[in-house]
Length: 142
Image 1 (cartoon, rainbow, N blue to C red):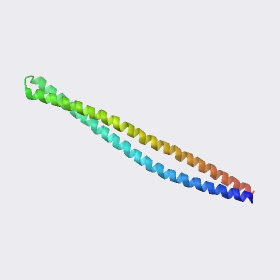
Image 2: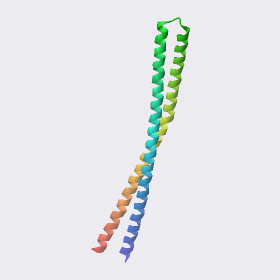
Image 3: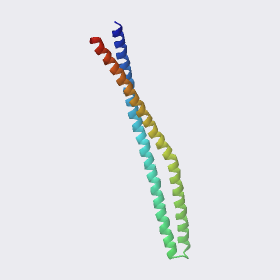
Image 4: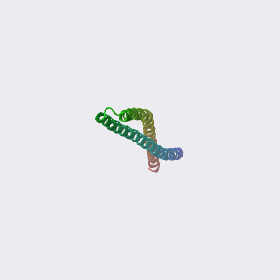
């Protein structure tokens, strides 16, 4: 009779660990989706900021070229100065986005990775409990 109590206890533990594992799989899926959304949004913001730098740089280059062709034109000189300011403002914004987005992306990926490790550990614990249960059943029926 002691063997049946042990088998029943092992079965209950295997069932409990299966439920833990199943819950962690659901959580890992949600975290992975959230992490990918964070990473994707971050890349989108980085791309937009980099595009603004490229556009401002092109505008500054064109304004400098135009000013070089007509050095005495005050309108072209003012336009070149404004384009230069716009370039450095866009560059500063890009650096700010990098400093803001990169750590958020790293945290999101680390969280998803840690949860995946926890899910794997729960899976291994469930398998060990299941193996112990089936071994006990085999010994009992032998």
